[in-house]
Length: 246
Image (cartoon, rainbow, N blue to C red; front, side, top):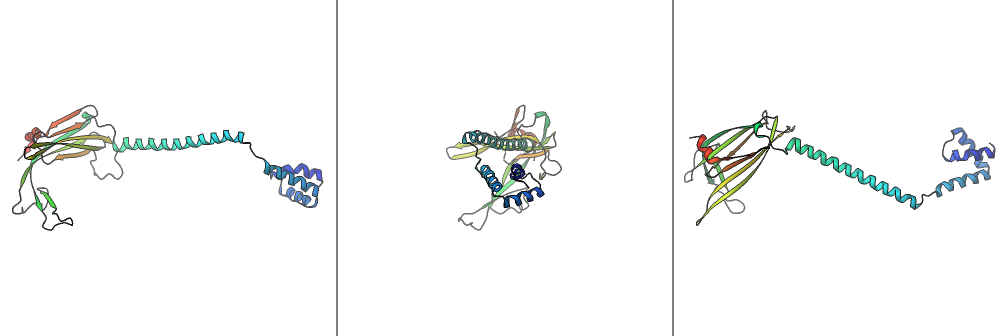
């Protein structure tokens, strides 16, 4: 192969664009021809020495940094949107409307007592056990215990949706006399949300139902339901008197 042909092919050879047969002929000629080999080495050196000026790199670095920040922002934005959708759909953000929620009320007297365990615990004190008529071990009643009659009221809520979720809050009013705290009155708040049923929800066949109850209703006790369109407050003492079954 002639030198002028090899020199014409060297740029393509350096870029690895020549065929295998041409490569073999070029390499054979470079091995035999010092002049062409020197041209080839010069071409390789020039390729290695090519550098992008710093003034050209700075804009590229800025573009790369902005692109990276945009990608990070998009990732976190997507996570935030998915989290918001999950909370809205499965946890609840907007309470149910008053016309979509129905309830029944049951009230009854409940006998209970507190029994102290005989053996002390590790701290040296004695643990107490609360027993009511709902417990299997309520009877026989131990001698010497103070049996208390509690006023229990229970709400059974039904939502016009496939599933509901609830959140509650309790505030207590302490009636204080000269002898100390005489009584504790509960003021209860609940929010009920229409949501979709989670796959691992264990509420059975009726996830649109929710039970709420108070075991010791006293005069002044209240329950406030926070709907989407309004709030509704019940005087639990009056409601108990109207529905109690002794």
